[in-house]
Length: 492
Image (tube, rainbow, N blue to C red; front, side, top):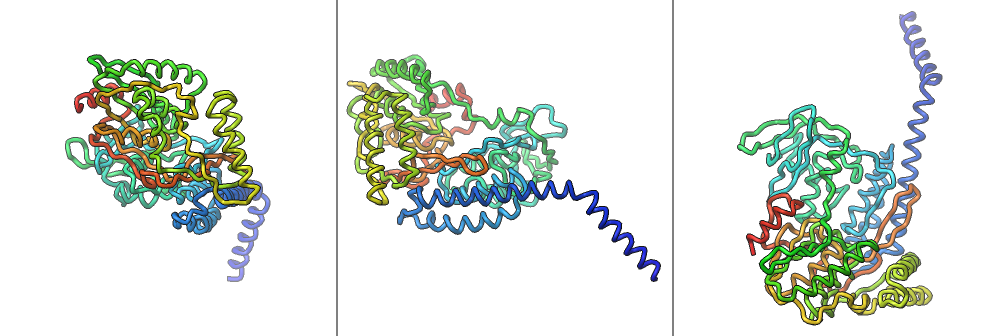
């Protein structure tokens, strides 16, 4: 017994010495890397929290107690999660967890180095309440469910349960929006580098109902994206153009509210062309691919189409007004915007003068130590010099097409169009946004870019995180322009 005990102790001693002599460089390197990312996560969370507290209007908005409550509760929960961080991917997941809890699409994060996504060879779409296969990879090593199959469950959870409990907390918690479910559906079979989930347990199989109704289990093989996934996930943006469909019918792609200098030159030509279609029978305003941007662009397009009678109502209903949260960060953001306005429109433009006045007012408000600054009620048409103004205006039938990405300035555009009597809304439900808007950004200690809004709308007709749901819902590929156009014209 003594001999055996001695042998046992010698083995323990040898193993301990082996670990001390041979393994430490690797173990210590891994632990050092993990500690590096844990520390960065803690620092990033602290900066985000502080920016929210000092600069986001929601942090002092008495009408939004849930936002104020999440600032601290969410910070504590994310701080606990940060103890499990061991990589950049983990760090991003924890930051996204905190950000998603604000349920504010304008609070967001962009990483300079995201790494690559992995996927299971197919991605889902949502049609009605069903989750169906939308795209499949070519030359996948194992069989994949065919397009239009319905995915019922993966692992031991239904698709809806998996999306709600495991994925939504890190990506989008606005489960009241149909568009949120559609976007989450794409994440079920994608380990997305843009939206990582902390310690995600990737499903090994899914139960699928084939197009003929037969149920079948499919084993999942997860592989790093080699280029196919990126093409499937990217949202196409049709060129912003006016298209004559014949017989007095016109299709306007209202797809780009963030135009470059070259895009602005094309926009000028399009605005002139729109002014000449006053006698058209039908105009379809197609916002597919539009994710928001500068609301001035939408105002110009509507001014060119609808005429001067609508010019003063292009931004918001007249009773709505905006309040800026007074902060050094807001002043810094306005100064940057002022420089951009000078470069893009010139210092003699109404746009530049508007931002110049707002910047001076913000500086004065900071000096006076006030919390809020009311934005002057000046319309976008006035700011832009009315380059799109049409003296007469289109009087025919009007239709609006939206996809699930329509948010921010795209929703502002929809506000005005859908207020016009007789307009027909087709396509998919839009996204939604909070009453908070106009963003600024700051680089975090990790190098990531953090964005947050700086002002709040009061008395806006459209509610907080409310979507627009179309009269006619498109059940095909919303990015297929030819199919969408045929379907729309068949319904008008």
